[in-house]
Structures are given as C-alpha cells and as structure tokens.
Image 1 (cartoon, rainbow, N blue to C red):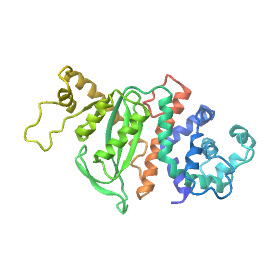
Image 2 (cartoon, rainbow, N blue to C red):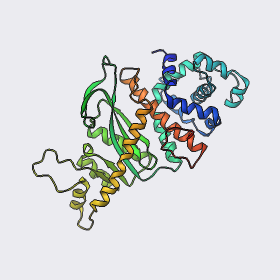
Image 3 (cartoon, helix red, strand yellow):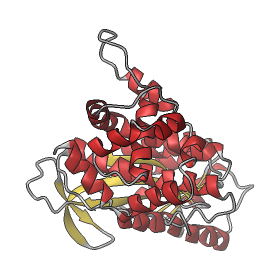
Image 4 (tube, rainbow, N blue to C red):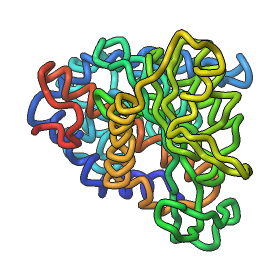
Length: 339
C-alpha cells in the first residue's frame, strides 16, 4: 500500500483525530514535553551499514515535524512538507530548513521497522512518570481480519466469544491502576505458548515490577507461577483442573503452591477473590484498543498487521502522555484527550 493511502487510513481513525485535536487546540507545545530522542538510537541500531550519506534530519525531528503538520490540518505528506517550510514551523521545530516530501515519505516507511520498540520506550516513559500501580492484569485478545486472502493469518478459536475467527492474536500486560498497556506481544493466535506468555510477562516486569499479577485459567502454568513467586510476585490466576481425575479444592493455583512451600502462610480466598476482580482492567483495555481500531484492518500479512497493532498501542500511550502533560490530575483511563 502506498504511504499516502496508509496515512489517509490512519487519519480516518477518530482516536487519531482526538490526538491531533489536543495538538491543535491545547497547544502543539505538547510535542515539546515528549522526549523522542530515543527514536534516534532505534534507527541507528537498525542501520545495515555505516556507508552512505549522513541523515539531514534526526528521526526524532522527522516524527515531530510529521505530528506538527498533521496538527496544522495537513493530511498529505506533500501538504505537511509545505507547512514545515514556513518560518513559524521551522522556529518551533528548531529546523534551519524545511523537509522535502521525499524525506518524509522515506521516514514513514522506516518508522514501521521500529514501531514495536517505540511502544516499549513509551511504556518506560509512562513508568518514569510515576503513575503506575502495583498490580498487573494479563490477557490475550483476538485480532480478526476481514481479509480472508491474508496468507499469514490462521483460523483460531476464541473461547470468550465461543467462536472461530480468522486472524492473529495479541498478548497484553496492563497496569490495573491506569488501565494502560505496558507490555504486548503480537502472536499468531489468541492461544499462546508458555514461552510467549513468559516473554510478555517479563517485559511487563521490566517496565515496573508488580506485587501481584492477575490472569484467567488459560494462564494456569505451574512452572511460570512458581518462577513469579520466586521473584516475589503473587500470581492470582484461576485454577484450571485440566488433565486430572482428582481436581484440587482450590480456586486459584497459588493456594496450592504456597501450601506446598510453607505451613506458616495461609492465603485468604475471599481476599484473593476481591483482588482478582480487578482483572477486569485488562478487559476494559482490550475494549478500548478495539474502539481505537485494533481490528479495523486494511492491510494484510504478518509485518503489516503487526505494525498496525503497534501503532494503535503507541497512540494509546501517546494519548495518555499528552493528557498527563496537559493535566496531571486527569483520568488516564479515558480515551478522549480533551475530556
């Protein structure tokens, strides 16, 4: 798909329009609150060779220029390029000269290669704001595609909807306090392997180590929960009595795991159940991401769909950062920036 067509599809998303609205109505200076310098490192790490002419502009400057142009109401790369050539834009962006259409077009394509890493850096930026809580909730969600000729998609079963779907899957780690996604892994199907679950949970721990992790019975993997306990993280995960003729008299696997370790500690099942209700945070986050267009797919193929997914995740965190910069007492759970 041509870069201009991709841009037009992105701009049709009402949540993208919300993000642009705060840049326009509440000040493009919001851009100056967000440190994008880490993007320069990401691009540098992905250079295949040190040969070739040096960049005229840093990738972080390219991204800020792109956002500035969008906030000015320009919906084409050529229009954005013309806007950036104005003296006001150049002073605001700290540029000595404007950016050509070719420069912006090249950056748009290159950004797809770093989208996942940008999301991870934004998650760390959220953590550095000091707004995350001490409980993580984990879940998987389906990403259904209407494009049945997508050769990389697969048929899978969604146990929540009790139906088969054609597409991909997404594993999410959500901070319960803010209901923001802090770790994610794009996978082939909603049902994930132990290795995939372990990887995304560890990514969440790297952002901020929780005291408690919540998950449904699909996450009832004994070895993984034992490792979490060793890391001083309490896994409250629904017990799954699969493959056993004599199911245990427990509601959460951790009850049995703790009992086997020591007789000096007993867990209060009612208290575990009370905390477990907070797992609804990850379901709410999933719903928000789908409202933002997670399954509004106009592209096909593993790489294209993965980029789409991470752009939605990036937008979610960008909205949170923009709202927090504008008002530190705002409700970060809201999608709307201005509300």
